[in-house]
Every structure is written in structure tokens, then in C-alpha cells.
Length: 227
Length: 227
DNA sequence: ACAAAAATGATAGTAAAGCTATTATATTAT
DNA sequence: ATAATATAATAGCTTTACTATCATTTTTGT
Image (cartoon, rainbow over all chains, first blue to last red; front, side, top):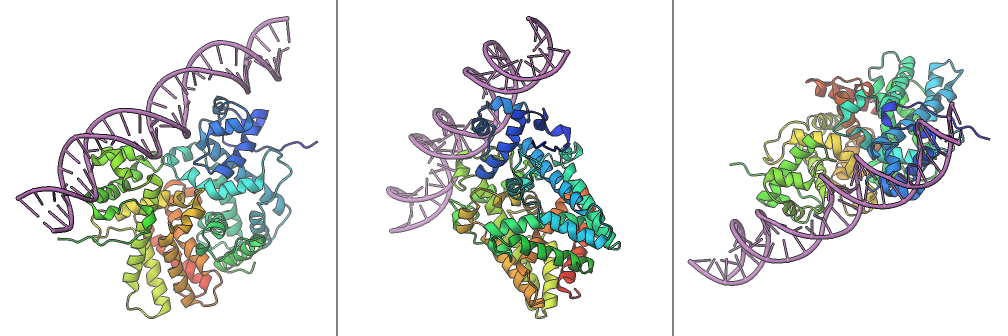
């Protein structure tokens, strides 16, 4: 019998912790699928309610609105990526090796993880690729940031920046490189599928391998180390 | 008496060419200011109509909906950047010099241009930074791309990729580098202002200089040339 | 200068989104 | 078994995102 791990996310994001109840988990599970299939703009709590056989009003008891739900899902995703990275570099000492493993773990954060039965990670990653920028490009960004809405992503970027600095202490832009890494990977994946003129990658099975190669080359060049 | 230049944008974007009438230009002018101040989500044609003293329905005669208007504005911005780049590299031969000038022109695409009286370019750039990703992260991206909704940006990226290739013919990712350049610059500017943990830049007057330096360093490193 | 054509204004109306409120019925905890 | 809590069922309200109609300007062609 599998026990679901759970992440502790910013409490301001929800009215009731969705990981703790059946309905809550169904909200998480189904919203990921529904946002993926409808797109965030066409996604509504009414449609989600219909999907899971519960009234709209019940969903409002968990999340104030669909924006909060999106931010929640995105935080969940970054917590999960962090968890995968830490797992994959545990017991390593060599900074270059740690960096290499970290980069590969980031790219591989696209496959199903049996530790979380109610989340389909590959689809959640699709949602992050397509919708995450909407979560932080809002008029209320400064308040929301103060409340901790983006903590998971910021912590992850800080961690990667640290790993980068351990390879090249003199590198001037570790945070920018770290955030750009995530944004770039997700953008290039999106472009490969939808706007191929904006990328050199082709949308195909092996795209992960190609992106992985590029990212190692890229970071290696910028830090002038061989990765 | 100043004569406004105008750009030829994809005709599918609008129902009536807004650059050709007084009301149309007021729509462009005021929508930029209003999207900047309200954010795209809270921006509506009703509010825009109130602002310019025209009924909502009149605006609908120019643009099918606010999404189309946003896409239009963003195309306008990229056409303008292209125009500024071409102006600044005219008569140059040396590929490295062309690349250097191009990068600087991109960064400097943040100041008022007196050739277009009805557009406040610095504010339009703010709108592009905050809202452009919403224009292409939609469920209808593939259809819209087919219709040419993103032509201006794709053409610009192609042009930069060409310039990059002329400096280093063997560089494998010219398109990805070009698109990443634009996305990175805009993201880092946004992060500096709103999510400082995600960047090494501080939001202050001289940020353009700092970003310019980083971008030259960055492209120089990746292409292994001195810029 | 004048009629025809085209653009704009004024106003109304509709469906859906984005909520909030209320009461009834299940579930769960003690 | 009962009290507390969560969920269901239903209703209703405001705003958004449009569409339609007709009157009034403004522009254009001759």
C-alpha cells in the first residue's frame, strides 16, 4: 500500500489544505488534467466541479479562486523538482559532479513519480510550461511575493545558484543563470512544440536528450568548466 | 509637423486598421497606458471605452477582443525593435561590430521614439515585459501561429539568429540563443523589480547598463568571441 | 455642394464567469 | 449518540465579454 508523500506549501495559498482530504486531492488531481486540456483561461471552478461531481461552492472552500489554485500547483511542482534534485545529489562531494547531476535531474523532472498518486507529474510539467508565467505576471505580484506565494521557486533558484557558485566562485550572475535555466528549458520545450521558428530543437521523443546536451554545454561555457 | 511612421502588421489581427483613424490611434495609445496600470486581467474594453470617451461597441469594431489587441501591441513592439536595430547597424560590415550594436540596440529599446506620437514606447515595453507571455501561452497557439499572429517576433528572432551565425558559423543554437536573449532580458528586468531573489540585478536607474554588460559577456562567452 | 457611404455614438440585451449565501445532508470525532 | 465539521444542493448577484439595432456624425466621390 503506497503512502503519499506531501509537501508543506505556503499556507496563504489555500483556505483548507487540499492534500488532507479526498475532495482536496481530487481537486488537485483533476485540476491539473483540466487546466492542461482546456488551458487556464477557459478553466473554471464550475467545470472542475462538474468533472469531479462536486458543486462549484465546495471548491471555493479550498481555494479562493483559480489563480490561487494555479499558484499552489506550481509551488507543488517546484517542491517536487527540489526533492528530485536533492535525492539525486545526496552523498556527492565534487561540485562539478553535483552540478552535472543537478542539471540532469532538472531535465528529467518530466517523468511520473510513484510517490504521489494524485499528481500526474508529466502533465503538471506541461501546465507549468504553459501557465506558470501567468502566475507571477499579475498586478498583485508584490503583495503575493510578500505573502510567500513564490517561495518554492525562489528557494530552488537560490539552491541552484549556490551549486553554481561552488563550481565557479567568481561567476557574477549565479541567480540569473539559475532562473534563466528553468525559464529557458521550459520556453524551448514550448517553442519546439508550438513556435519552432524560435528554437533549434525539434519536438520529438529525444528532445530531452537534446536539451540536456545543450544545457550542459551552455552552463559549461558560461562557467568555463567542462561538464 | 510630425508624420507618424507606421508598421504593416498581420491583417488578421484587427477588424479595422487602427493606425488609420483617430479613434484607432486613441485605442492603441490608451490601451497601452491602461493595460500597464490595471494589468491585462483587469483591463476591459468597457474601461478602455470610458477612458477614451467612446462606447465599448466601437472598440469591438477594431479588435475582436482584448487578446487580439494585446497581440497587436506586442507585434507593434517587435516591429519597432527591429526597426531600431536595422537603423543602428545600417552601413556596418564587421559581423562582430554588427552583433555588438544589435545587442545594445535591443537593450536600448526602452526609450521614447519621437517617430510614433501615439505610442509611449517605454510603457509599451513594460506591457511587453509583463504581458507578452500571455499572448502566446494560449490554447489556440497553433491556429494563431498559422495565421501569422507571431510573425514580427519570429522574424526578429530569425534575424538575430542570422547575425549570431555570421559571427560564429559553427554555433549550434542560434535561434534558441536569440529567443532566449529577449526572454531573458525581459525576465531579468521583471525579476529585478518584483522577484529580486531570482536575479543578480538591482532595480535602479543604471540597470540598463548592467544588463547590457551581462548580455555582451553572455553572448561573448557562448560564441567564444570577445565582444 | 450634395448625396451616398462609412464610421461612430447611444443604448439595450444575452450568456457565461466569478463569486457569496443558505440550508440540508452526510461524515467524523469524542 | 451527539456535536462538530465537511460536503451537497440550490439560488442569486455582479461583472465580463460580447452582439444587435438604430440614430447621428464624418468622410468621400462627383
